[in-house]
Amino acid sequence: MNRFNTLSFSCCIACVSAVVFPPSLTKAAGPHDLPDGFTELKIGDRAPEFELPGVDGKTYTLDDFSQPDVLMVYFTGTHCPTSHGVERRLQTFLKSMQGQSFGFVAINPNHSSGLRPDEFGHTQYDETFDDSRRYAHDLGWEFPFLYDGEKQLTARAYGCLATPHVFIFDQKRTLRYNGRFDDSRFPDPATVKHHDAINAVNALLSGKPVPVEKTRPHGCSTKWRERSVHVAEEEAKWQAAEATVQEIDVDAVKTLRQNGSGKVRLFNVWATWCAPCMQEMPDLTKIARKFSRREFELITISLDTPEDKEDVVKFLGNVRAVMSDKLRKSVEQEGRTTNNYIYVGASTDDLAEALDPEWPGPAPYSLLIDQDGNVIYRKVGVVDPEKLTDKILQTLTHFHKP
Image (cartoon, rainbow, N blue to C red; front, side, top):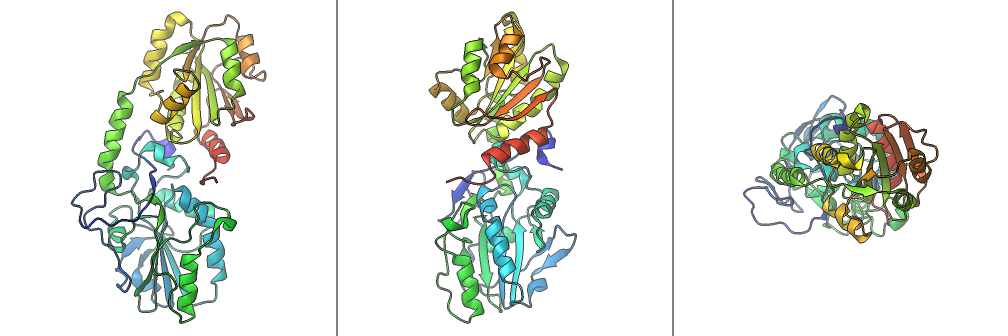
């Protein structure tokens, strides 16, 4: 099941370049700590054994990849924009290797409990076995994709620091390369200057020394189960945040609607007397949290009267319509104090003309606009969360952007 459809808040993304191996760590409670059992696999070490379920329903061991002269073990997950950026280059490379004595297996090292909700802002998938299967299916992957997230023993044994992280072994399954796939975090192949993993494979197949044996894996840090301590701490902070509401008039709505803020904006017109409005708001606030580390803002406009402000604040607080630190900073830079408003005008026609002349009048009404104010999505009535999320991702993209 897509994580977005659950009520769980334990999710998400701290993208880092992993460089230093601490000599020993007894617990992984912080966001970047390494867990017990983590091993730095060195050049010349043997490939650790594993037994893992594949998304194709089969169980795989290292012996299942014993035939090829060269084996690439590729750790990747479903949430990381760096992994997404490599996907097409990886598939192009694998296609070029057909007919050669080369083996490939991908492994998901992540566990869902090690991610915050805002770390899923580049994906519509969760870091679960089921969503790993869906991810592979949607990308058309035909190679083995294994799931190590349950116990994460293989990731610890190989020393997986990030996704993606590449380990390349010779015919004796001796480690000959450890590091990144290539040096670009962007999807455009033209941005790649160093094809380190591909160079290592070609060198081994040609019987030549690997030109660069070790590089820095860059991407999203491996999401260990132990990281759930950090996730719980962040969740407590989120639950303690207060919702705020200010009055707004037509002129201020026009200014927000014009955008130019650099953010994708989702406007939602609602009221506490509107049952469908209250029904959909939790989905909208989960979307807002999911994208809270990206250039995105949910702006709510209540049709309640200013006298009902207390009820509005209470409801928005209950559904966690609060601002992240990132959003609060950008809002304050615009000279605003909140992203939740009560409309003070007498005429909803005036509000419609200011916000969207195509709004026919009923609430709830949602309007998604891009950074330049162009309409991406509009909906009268309760939104489809998955469809709305996809629209946002199509605009913000699944990747890092130059």
